[in-house]
Structures are given as C-alpha cells and as structure tokens.
Image 1 (cartoon, rainbow, N blue to C red):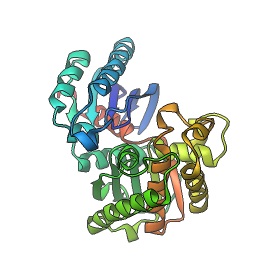
Image 2: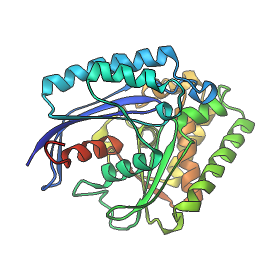
Image 3: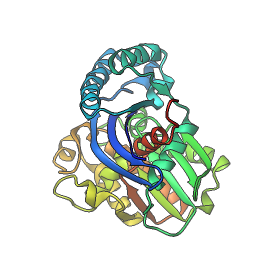
Image 4: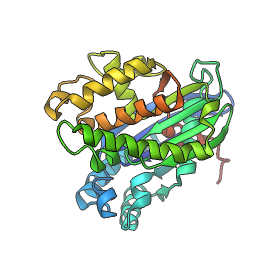
Length: 315
C-alpha cells in the first residue's frame, strides 16, 4: 500500500524536505518534492550554547515554505527531526515552539544513536542498495554539527555520533582564509580523537564498504567529478577513491573564500565550511583504511520518510 509522507531533517547547516510516495512492501520510494535550504541553525552554538535569533528566523522562514508544499501535496503523515544543533542548545524550546506553530507537528530532537540508525536505513533501504555486494557497510553521515557512524549489513549493528561536523570544525579550528597549517593540524587532532571514541564502540576494521552521506560528501563528489553543475543523478552512487578525496581536500584547504565561490557545484551556503567537511572525510578514509567511498544522495531524510511510511495507520 502506497503512503504519501513528508519528512523534514533540520540539521546544523541545512533544513531539508522530502515529500514522497512510499510502498513498504515493494520497497519503492518516489520523490514528489525534495528540496534544501541553508539556514545555518547551528551558527555559534558551539561557542555560545544558544541558537542565534537570526538563525531561528532563517529556519522558521524555511518552515513556512515547507508547510505550504506539504499542504499542496496533501501528505498524510509528517515527521520533523532535528539533530545536533538543536540537541545542544539551551534555548531549544524556542525552536520547538516556533516549529510547532508553523507546521503543526512536534519537532523531535533525536539522539545521535537514532540519527545514525535513520541514516543507515535511508542509505541502504532501496532495493538496489549501494550497488555494492561487500558488507558490512560503514555508513558515515557527515553533518554540520556532528558525524554519525553506523556499521551493519541488513540493519545497524553498532553506531556512534561524534561532534566533528563541518560547521563545528570550521568554527573551532579553520578560522583563517585559507586556514594555516597549524589550524589544519589542530582540526585533524580533534577529528582523530573523535574517531578514537567511534572505534571504541564501532568495529571499524570490519567494514568492507564505506557509504558517505550528506552535503559535504556529495559536494566533494561533485568537485572530484568536475561537474559543471550539481547533478544528483550523477553523484548518487558515484565512487570516489582516497586519492580523489585527498586532491579535493588539498585544493579546498589551500583556496580562499573567493576562490571557492567559483566552484560550479558548490552551494553558496557551503563555501565557508566545505574545506572542513572534506578534511573530515579524508581523515575518516585514512583512519579506516577504506580506499573508496560510495556516495549516496539517500540519507537520514529518506530514513525519516521510511519510518513514517511503515508506521501503522492510526498511530
């Protein structure tokens, strides 16, 4: 039975909407509307512990837009999931109240473990999966505030969320334009320490296929593939080698903000944080010894949609 659902993923850097028709029995998901707005909800959260007024204003404006799309497409169920930034903020109730007023649903500020599980489902639920037969998968969802690691084959077997997202790493370390070698080294030390935490609970050495999710990974893929414009059909399930990721990372870390604005596939809202995102991805690949990453356009947003489609009617 096909169900029309709406999923909203509100992260540290972006807020995204998916309205889709899903058939759990057939395992099919058909997009009706998929869109993203860069709102930088996590602006300054790592330093202040609070959501900035202007960040809340940008996020609520996107919610108004999304509410209209959901009404027009007549989704029968809506789930709003909020992740790292709103999880950490002292004034998260202000965020929740605003979302509830606009969309009529309670925003769920989920744990890192649940975020990881939804990301795994989103990346692996479609029948074709990643097109790769070697398992277990290590699914890495590289966000703005945090990065989730999930190991599994048919289901998540181990997971960990750590605070090494692209916004957080930029604000903590990569402050100059371009960043200094000392700043880059400090960021790598921070990332490595977080990977120690991951390795304590996720057996990274068991992974056979690395699946990379979210905007930093897909953007690195677009740059590596030298695309003239962002094309999700080319990026979805693209395979990048470690050498390609190293090349892109070195280029981004050596570039100024102005130089990065000329990259065709780079969304303006990611210009200042993409170098940190690429550095996180490179460090993960080097640490795990996995020399290839399979890039997926399907991620936590799709996982949220599947969770609603498979919820019994009436609940």
